[in-house]
Image (cartoon, rainbow, N blue to C red; front, side, top):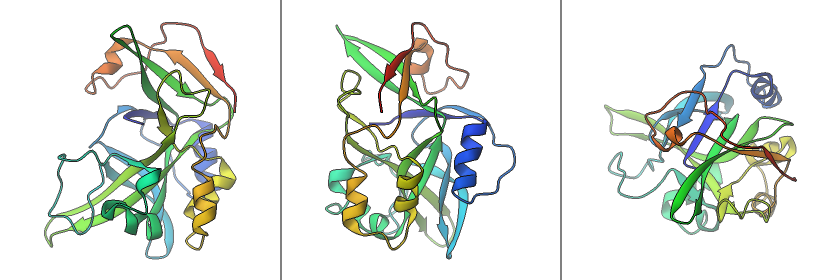
Length: 224
């Protein structure tokens, strides 16, 4: 799954955005982003590719409004064509959620240790879904991050992981005319690039903590 992540104003993030044809100035640095926070999302709007801040907890356009009754910040890839909540977005509202790193908790002996994952090669590009909800007065753009089964290298940390895309994969995901079979290939439980994993300070357990993650151990490499 993916329940926390960071985005910083670094060259790798700008390189990703440039590849996605997003011309943007300095990015606000955001640490320990959590569900319901506002997060930057690359998507199409009226035929044009753009980037918008969205609520990280999908609000389907047909729903009665924002709710946290159901966990809609992650969308299991197995359910995208089965669930009414995701079907329309999977067909017509796919997005890229750029990130510098993300956090997952490793359980061991009743303890949960936060680990920070990043790539030394590029910014992370999460496969996302988005939707637009309005009651005529309130207007909400919202998103969800797609998850898949964990790659073997990631399995010691969690049984699921966000769908991470390399540049060609991001292009396919955003392609409005992409074949469903090609989209499903992106859900394979494998890493598209090398990841680095490092344990971090337990203050990241609290979503109100919005500062730089502090490593507490050695870096491990997860081959892509």
